[in-house]
Length: 251
Image (cartoon, rainbow, N blue to C red; front, side):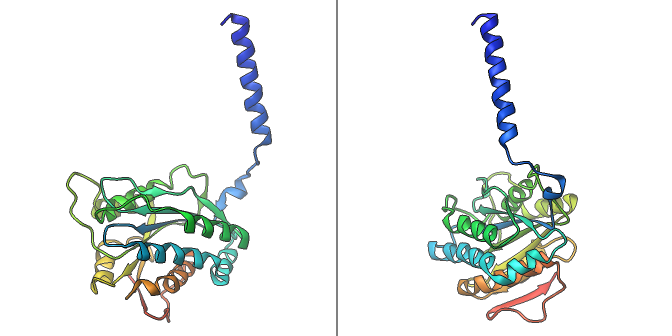
């Protein structure tokens, strides 16, 4: 290409970049501020069958469509949160992450709910909770939002399984959370392990006002998730009452 041709191409590229930038939605510093940055980390390990996985995803979607959760979001100083989904399983494989969604009203909450319902299951295998948490926490980096709090909400039905190779284990992930000022809360599904909630309290939850809720079966997941989201969004003290089949306690 001749010098003139290169100059013309560079000019055209610069003009295109300028045009695209002009057409892009403008975001102010205030629009970047949110009350909460939240990652919902969902268990897709081998112990979770397709029905149980769907109950988790549909439960999250139902929670965001509920009037109570939408009112909790609107009640904050900014009136909006940024939320993403992280589906985790085998420690040696990265979690499957959605982009962050800005939720500020019924329409945006319903849009996120639909994205969760449609998200395919692409991971399986062991119960790599520590690695899943690490992927979820790194997802906060450069997400474009400035939240007053950062929370990872992890749900699962089992304890971490020993990996074959070096990966991030729960102890390291919890230290990572403390170093980054991130809160980890848990929703333990005790259908196969009646001691899982206590194990989550001892080994998973970390950070100021972190807490663990539990359900005895997957069918109670949706009601518990709705109440858990309200508590996380509003940063409330321990609940006096919980959904049927669920218990709640602060770590």
